[in-house]
Length: 316
Image (cartoon, rainbow, N blue to C red; front, side):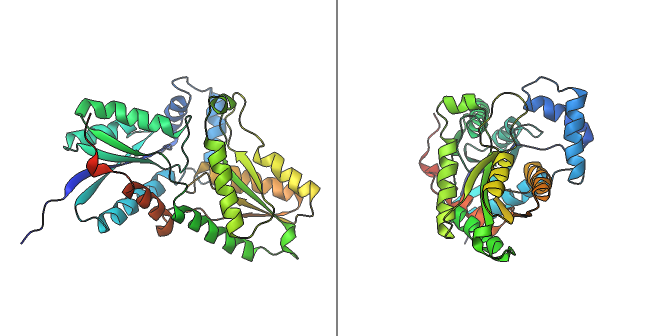
């Protein structure tokens, strides 16, 4: 006998997006700048960065792998719900709206949405959900959102294990000669003045992970700021110089807890720019491995989705 039919639930996974080829650079950058086209010089700088990491970012492929594993983990432990995966990007096709429309045309009436960014932010993640829900209204679709998932135990467990392993592998005479810097993407100051809780959430997560591995001293820095306006400080370059100058640091370990995978901000801003700075300062550069499609890390997302009262949601 066949078992009871499972309820179909859309699983909308959203990320920033990344160019798939050189021709995508201009429209991608234009989208980031809210419709204002960049100059040729600005595009050239961006192209140079992509060239430095091999020509393309692995973000799209990694996000797909993370999303597929997330759907797999959810469906393996669900008796009455069948999650159907849809992926939408903020700045590249298929856009968030495209993914929602595909869900609607497939007959999906309920969905859960998660952003591949673990912390809630008015500046960043909130806009993803707004775009998804605006398009969902056309189809009478209810979308239940995972606003943040940085406090899931599996999230901290991944970073604990990765940091502990990295620290154990650093070759210095004493542990005091290792400087640890937790990093996350910077935000414009005007968003902070609006009451965005993102900095506090990142700081609390860094404290939790640092304590879990027994660190008595660590730093929090912001990286990958935009080129216009005032952004959250202290930036990672300033903090790196300060800990090397003020302390007898022989190695700097970077822990990018604000990111979920290898992409431009990690492979260039950390592995090239921060490494070059460490070389200049004559200290060893080390970085904790990114989660990518690590099963424990993806389980944090799955747990956050399971906490949602999806079956109890009623379309408004």
